[in-house]
Amino acid sequence: MWRHKTVIFYTISIFICIVVIAFSYYVEIRHPKMRSHGPPIATDTITALDSRTFIISPYYDARLGQSVRVIAIIHVSVKKLYCIFHCSSNQNISVRAEIDLHSDRFGFPYGTADLLCAEPSGCDYTYMSFSATNSTNTSQSLLFEVRNRPPQPISSNFTVCISTLYGNYNNVLQMIQSIEMYKILGASRVTIYNTNCSQDVDKVLRHYIDEGTLEVVPWPIDRHLQTTIEWRYSKGLNAEIGYFGQTASLNDCLYRNMYKSKFVLLNDIDEIIFPVKDWDWSSLMENLQNKHPDTSVFCVENHVFPNSVNSSGFDLWSHIPGVNILRHSFREPIDWKVFNSRKMIVNPRDVFQTSIHSALKHSRNWVNLESGMAITFHCRHKMRNDITSEHLIPDDILRRYNMSLVPNVDKVIQRLFSQ
Image 1: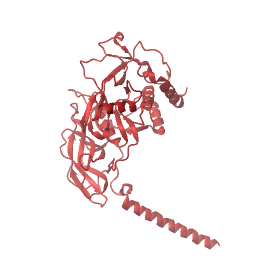
Image 2: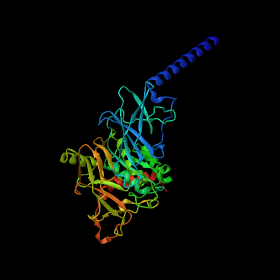
Image 3: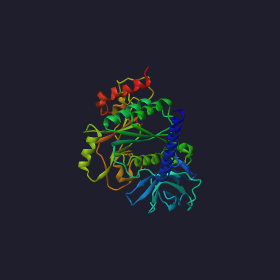
């Protein structure tokens, strides 16, 4: 009996080994993405090709013919780059990239760029790599997985793209209030690019990741380039790229959500796009699409809501660090002598390049929305110097959501920071 059981045990063990080996062979041949040998796969959001070229991510883009659009940060002097497609047949095909440096570089020597790589015919690929020379020797190259291939069905109506948290960001209360307000207005997802933040903010981020609301993209731009909080270069400024590479992160977010979300909102963490006549973004966009059927970029007027001596009430959560946006119930009159830094709601499938306040390249129309349709609620600590509190205009556009916003915020705070 003992020998019989032993024979059965070894027979089963041999059978399992055969199955495992066969499955591994199947995975290696049919699914090269799961390869266990060859060049390593890039895992960082920003990867240095050399000191002048930084790869963020390649995205499949069939809108201008079958091609791959690579979001990158490059020095203005870069004129030649090559995309190397790694075919499943173990053949590597090198294609010279068309370099499209975005027009909004704001005077800095480094800027956001698209590397447009024509897809080689007959090449079934999952990965690609990059080179400054026309060579298919990729033994020292990192592999990058091509995203959005094939495009997936849209799963969200609205995604908010926020860039970027920096300077050990610690505005805990405003972050919770903003994300809860986004959810009330209709956001299914929020994507935040994070350079660095405090432990308390990290706790908030992890909460929303676990909830399924938030995607946090590490954004270690300061490891690669000298950056600044200034958006425009000026003589003597010791920086290579402006505002923590904001335009690069926004473009990556646009493509990251291109086939996931019907609409994408591009704004900062201290801003909320509010409908004025409608209650939420779904109703707003339904009305706007009826009114502007051939439009895919909607630019929303910026209105500053400073902290004011006239603000009162809503002294909840005083133990939480950060700004209480419920106390910002007065807005500044618009100064028409200066540029209004509008933020956007876009159909990402119609946009090719975006800047901070406008879409640079798009296939359909754009429109500046009237303030009677929607406004950008921009929460700022101080009012501008040329006005006093008597000039401020009462505006309760945020407080009309108090019945939902206050308990939702309180629930999160009680869970994460109970006293």
